[in-house]
Length: 165
Image (cartoon, rainbow, N blue to C red; front, side):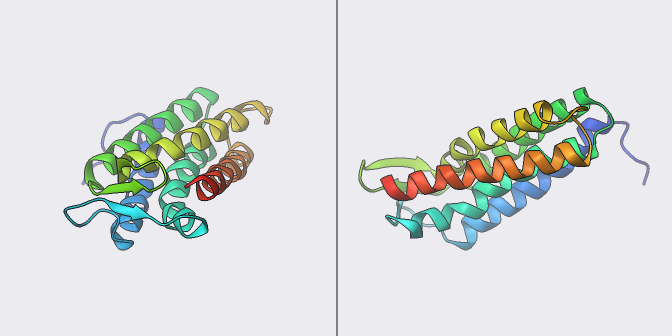
C-alpha cells in the first residue's frame, strides 16, 4: 500500500494523536469512567487523581513530545504538536462519552472533556518549553524537554485536582 501524500509534520501528528487517543480512551474505559447511564463520581483525594492520570499524561505528554522529537524544522515541531493535541483531544471527547461527577462542586462533565481541559495547559507548557529552552526547537532534546516539562505540569495539575476534588 503506498504512503499517503501528507507532509511529514502531519504524519507525525497523526501518529502521536492516535497513540495518545488510544491510551486516553482505553484508560477511561478501563476505569469504567465512560460507561453507565449516570455520572461516575470521581473519588476525592489521590484516588481521583490516579484515575485521571493515564489519560491526562497521554494527551499532554505524547502530543507535546513526539512531534518535536521527530521533526526536521521548528515549524514542523510546533505544527505537529498542535495538530496532535487537537486530534487526540477531539477523539477522546467524542469516544469517551461517559460523564464524571466532581463531588464537592456537583459539576457534571463528560470524561473526555475533563481530561482534555486538564491536559491542555500541560501540553501547551511542554510545547513552549521545547521551543524556548532548546537552541533549535526541534529534535530529541526538544522532545525530551517538552516531555519532562509537560509531565511535571500535568502531575502538578492532577495534584491540585486531588486536593480540591
